[in-house]
Length: 242
Ligand code: F6R
Image 1 (cartoon, rainbow, N blue to C red):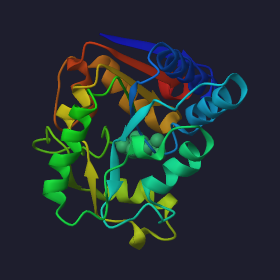
Image 2: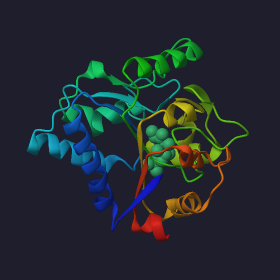
Image 3: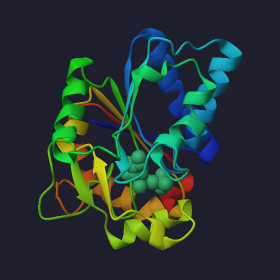
Image 4: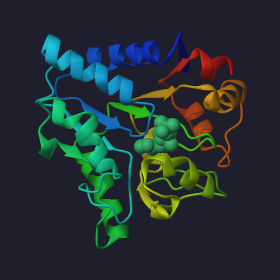
């Protein structure tokens, strides 16, 4: 079942999402969170940092797994998702660094590493809440529209569209890696609860299609969320109305 909340603007969207995450962490202090990067969750992370600083929200027993990382980038690279997570969340709350997991963009044997990543999630007891953004082309994590989609964590080729859209986080478009490690659709659907955020008019066509379709398609990866029993979609008015 999909629940939808519409916030007036980005700030309200972020606050609605934060309420869910804050409540969940309080209810289960040793929660396993699935985390995302990109522009969308920054406001949510700011709210979580505020809750930690002002209300003592405790991350000391929280475990996290990120959705994806660019192949070839170490967490020291300013455009890597490892770096982003430190800047936007980890450095500002009391999460233990050893409890945070981000796919290793420098893994020597990527295929083997992908299996290990899924095993680590399983050993941690599975993901309690998975945070997702969505691409303008309907991708979730880096599961790009394709003839088929991977179930488990895998190495993916980024589409031209994604490379272009994400080049804003790099000095030039040439610097954007062409491949990434990404959790698969099956891994995402294993999460007990999914929270998808989308803001801004560029996301409006994707949200509209998602809310109006009763078909799943690998050409529209976000549609697989229709198979999950507990999905909450939180958008701002621009993403809702276009
Ligand atoms: C990020 C991720 C991506 C983004 C999506 C939207 O970890 O997995 O799927 O969620 O590309 O990105 P933004 O939020 O920058 O619009």
